[in-house]
Length: 273
Image (cartoon, rainbow, N blue to C red):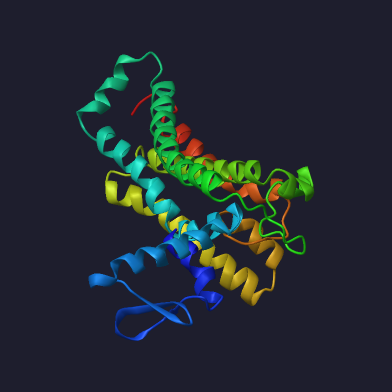
């Protein structure tokens, strides 16, 4: 998030590194970040803040959430890992009090998954609201749209006419739906694996291996870029454009949920844990 504020200013050459721990804010002036020059350091922060306000909300969100394309499953899986440890404890016995163990298990999986996904989404909302308040510059580069999710349905003008609403909708996909699917996947694995480390590892391996397979084999060796982008689970988290329709982009995100349901039904055919 911080680098997204500084990055365009450095790229424009208005701030450059100086010797001895100094930063050049203007060609005629050097700002030192320590000692008696602390006041001038605050003026440099003011320059950075002004640059931040000149960036559109979309650009700020793109550069501040890029890392989540890599770490999203590691964070989402923690919710399922917490459920797994409770499920493998004495709390497992509570399911025998219910008339339908299957229903009780589903409800617990949904509850833990939704709570963890909601926590991540609230974190996104904090950044989103902050940017909406502090960065009022609209996106005006009509030659290029940095994101294409939903636009094949709503039209490209939607991105420019409802810039803030677009990023709220995309945040719902990237930081609510995606964390929910992998947290639910991890919860469902609790019924099959007796080791919590394996339960946490499988969803991450699924995400990493399938991403690498699509990027290297389907896209690189077989030159099937369209199929690779559809099957690649990390594409929806990517901070870039893609030539895929919204339904085809979201359809692969259902795969972890489908696997989860199959696992639960397979191991609870007779309502026995």
